[in-house]
Image (cartoon, rainbow, N blue to C red):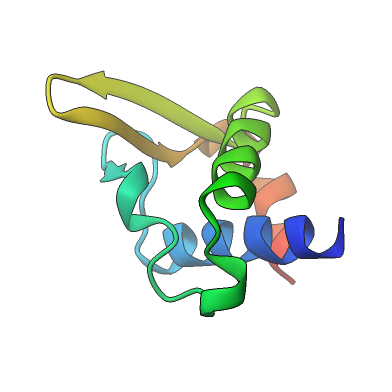
Length: 84
């Protein structure tokens, strides 16, 4: 489960640095970019994204070309606590 925490932290930090809040979105296919190859296995990253969506840390926006995500501004304190 340590890998899962590392992946979640990486995704949250990446979106935080890019200021991807609420109405600014990015494709879920861009989230694993930058992760080390051993952590980029599709199953682990997909599971991490699903958990972040269930925890409402990530917000989803379905589009005709795929799923887009952004950080939930209402969880800003929780997000900042996770990345420190």
